[in-house]
Image 1: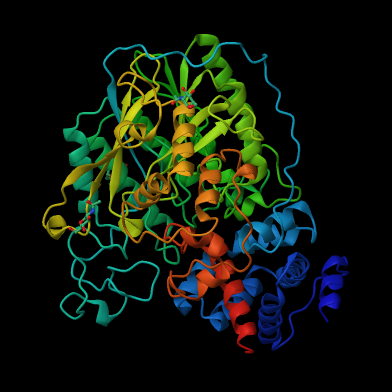
Image 2: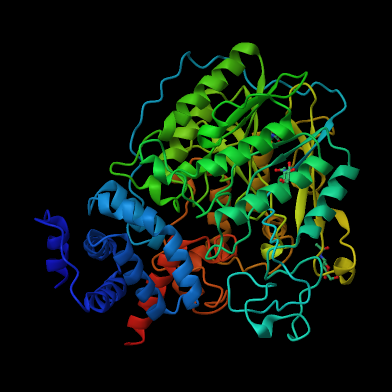
Length: 619
Ligand SMILES: *[C@@H]1O[C@H](CO)[C@@H](O)[C@H](O)[C@H]1NC(C)=O
Ligand SMILES: *[C@@H]1O[C@H](CO)[C@@H](O)[C@H](O)[C@H]1NC(C)=O
Ligand SMILES: *[C@@H]1O[C@H](CO)[C@@H](O)[C@H](O)[C@H]1NC(C)=O
């Protein structure tokens, strides 16, 4: 039977099949069974073969079948299943219809979404550099008084947040009135006026944060994306535009100069940013246009090349030798179905080539560069191929790149690049990626970061993480934004060579911090707790600490020690402590709402997980 389905999928179809009466029901049960049988790479390909047959009946048919399967699985409420699938089915349909079962693309899909194939080997790709790598290295600090730069991320403001509504609902985010029982005055679990860990935050939390940032009087700020809330099954273009208006409007009125990056949530449907090789009808041009207008207003820069083409730009910070390059990381995101083309593109929209041109121009002009983007290039959510290509660029321009700045994970992390990943050491560490935690409180207290920056080299001399403690009794009256920890004091003091006040936090410094974590589990424990600002700190036992340290040393994702994890799930209803952890201990730390409910791709993973459980229970 399975073999037959696979063969049928591989055989060219003579003519377009005609949908028979009752065919939807039978395909729902066939696909549900394929999900149940999907236990390894081969059976995942069978599942893709089945989905290809479904795709041949058209988008509408695929939508009906997947919604039916989602319903049987109980992965989400019916309206959530239906909403997510309806919005993303055009992209999934496009990808699956063109996919070759068993190809690199198909295996990448099966490893990235359901952990059923090994991550395929990185495909070699020659990046052409205009000139050889120069002999110079990072310049030493100037010794001049530092300037302050604020980094905030993943704000996810929910304009439909209602104070007093139910915070304990069955949806991906609460604090909205979905039913009469959720209404203020009716529910006995009311949301406070400034936010709840089960909800994306109200606008007034953002007002509070930006007021606190403005009081610190930074030279400028960086924002690493994700304006829109996680109501992914409901979100529309109109809502996204309102959200962009509210959040970028708040930046304009409170903060002045902000360099920002595109987030995977900053369009509707989310995650789907096709390259120029995909038909243009799928392009979220309206989102690029709106963001370009916002970015131009914030930077005062007249032309931001590429921004309205694909959400990337390069700008020279006024009266300085700092070039800020904001690039679109969503092309390399495993939840962007439009990236699963056949074959997968090596350089979507030529963005990597453009990055090389910008970095070369900076090198020629004696400038330093900051790269800002949403998804950390070494993250588990980033394609390994493009992580490696990107890291090659970092290696070539390591002397020019002063720092990389990311968001997306909602947690406080970092990533180190090395010239030699087989010998990851303080003297092979070449670049620092700073990952700032979120404002949305779904994975810990709302947070922003203040860097001390050398005004000449633009190297990071120190940073202080700020939080407004959501567990504090006064939070709902008025959030107080307080320093939480400081990198040089709280990590530097753990090193055998304590850096002095004027030293840069170099890649070598951060490598040495990871060595201190290896030697002393208490140092690792502090890092581990800080990831979520002390909130719901998951246990990290067995090989967990070793793997996490390896991930910090994994800016080239193929070296990050992240294992594929069959049948993982991010469902809130599956719980953090429950059945999921048994299935997927390695990804336990990733059970955070930031990954939760990010659309169709995690939904498919959840369905696969539920199908596995159903099979185990003999259903
Ligand atoms: C938000 O919308 C208002 C009303 O259309 C407009 O005046 C304002 O410029 C917009 N602000 C941003 C940041 O888009
Ligand atoms: C936040 O407040 C709670 C309750 O007062 C307290 O237990 C916790 O330690 C605080 N967290 C931080 C990081 O200060
Ligand atoms: C890192 O550790 C090595 C070995 O202990 C030491 O030689 C080096 O100076 C340290 N570098 C920094 C920046 O901490």
